[in-house]
Length: 210
Image (cartoon, rainbow, N blue to C red):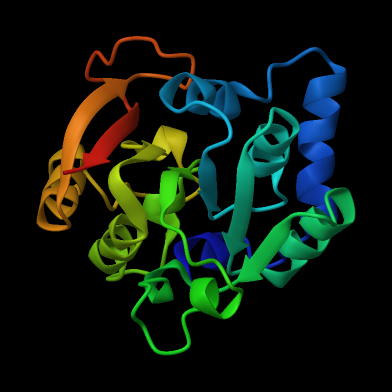
């Protein structure tokens, strides 16, 4: 069980999606993650939305000309993603099982043979995976990147930015996981809008596969 599903056992993809639809209707910017991705890689890059939820980021990037694959462990989330964008590839799997050489890899099974130009992990994905699998998740994602490909992940470093009572992943710890996986820190921001990171409780990190 992931920390996310443990924190919110009544997972409802339609309700989750409705919250963002309401925010958009009120004029809120709900596409900051996708916008940053467009700055990092040009179209028609191959993008993996890791922990995609109901597909908000992948769907927006596909609208902008990117080739997108979404993957999430929660069936309810993916059901909603498929309703919204039936033509995109949506896969159900644990992120720790994504290594391309893993037995039964869902990426390979789906016929995706190319490496990804960018992998985006928005929505506190890294600290909300199953406890003890954080390094395996980072390694699996890194293995799916093309040489020079980017992993961009935004997550809370303080409980104020998380739906759980403590922050299980520090920036130093995350950077170490990335380094072990062959990734080099390239940029770090305080928000998906690209504001400079100032040591606050939320960070967006961009690591490149060496």
